[in-house]
Image 1 (cartoon, one colour):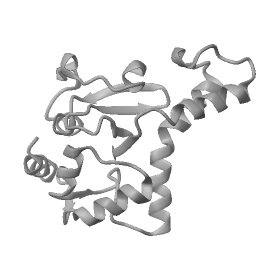
Image 2 (cartoon, one colour):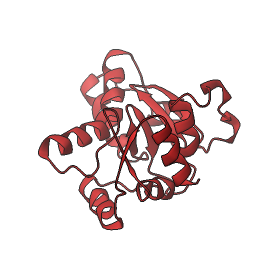
Image 3 (cartoon, one colour):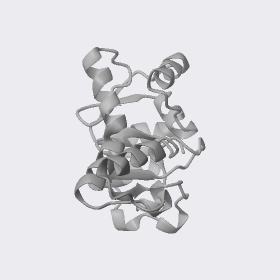
Length: 184
């Protein structure tokens, strides 16, 4: 991935790009939110920080913004819990679903701790933190309605900003991500 090419693509779509994050800022962000940016996401943010309604403002340390970021980090789990409660969702690898809803939710939350954390990129599009490698796919996450939205970060922005159709994603090349790929 050439992060400068991605930045230029975003600028061409009138996305405001702020000064890049510094390595120190990235370390503070990762520590604050207990996440780890995959290398290509890190490289991207070291070239520029996109801003706007649906982008994450990682630099803003106001309480309101910190709470907003935490909420977006919790969004995938909240959606899964919602579907466990209201839509009979149950991941088969969790074993047999308990008849007690409270116990089912407890198991869901407990098992969720072991899956790769999803890091918000834009709106409800996420990149997995694990494996901490380049070319992790981008997922569109809405409860357990999860689809691929790009083979990797660079291809994702093409799809998001209509430079590539969703149907043209090379689904066969997408890296398997524990748990999340099974939900696609």
